[in-house]
Image (cartoon, rainbow, N blue to C red; front, top):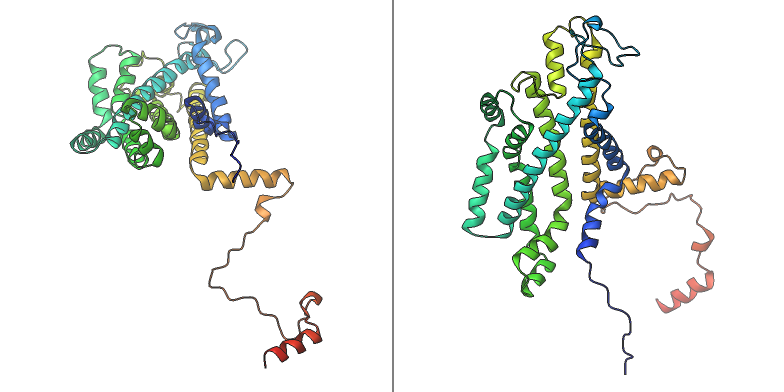
Length: 353
């Protein structure tokens, strides 16, 4: 009679543990570096009123086109405005519009994409058709129309337009991944147990989609920031809305590029590049977490670096399965362990005449 199995049963993973494992994508070096840079800009946006040495609209007629100095660290504009104060206050507009647009677009993408991927029939096809319609809606003409309706359009309105026109790509990706997940064993088991649809989606599916949702959010933040600064630079959005694009617009209009007044246009340009690098690093970290091949390659490289080995010096030789076994030349010496005693060969010949 077999003894009873007294081993404790494996604990079922909770929603918190699933969520913690889903956010493990932010634990690699690339994501940490990107989050650190992005966090710096967020802090600047939050404490802009405290960090800015002057008001962004304060005019000093005695310090026009002044290069960087002790009083004005990033110089002044054509009417004596402090460039550093304008860059700091412009950070708030960039962060607010980028995150609001990404949050709105991601929420719409999750709701429509997950539902369209889980349900079947005409409901799924209708949501898919709606997604395809928004894929071809151009955002630029819509923003121009909305901006013309306001003398000074609020940041929330600009973010809403960018969010409404930017959710379709994320919804399409989430729909495809949800269609792959709905036939998995754990989803089938939850459905067989009579779990409600809301719990299946929120507890079983969303933690497994968190990496794609995060990648969609980061990508939308990048697109929204680039769209805002570009539209501000070309003059579509009124220059009264402070952001890095309007600073570049003012610098271009006053001839800062021609007169090589680099302190006016270089700082906002570097800020746009820095926040783009930060968001790209976060996306690279998410890709490394989602793609098992990239993740294993990164772990292998880190392990070799800890052992003091140079990754570039190692070469992995892959032979095809049909490769012939290695043959030895006739004069090659045979290892002692491979020699056969004479008695053994004689007995073998007697058994097999």
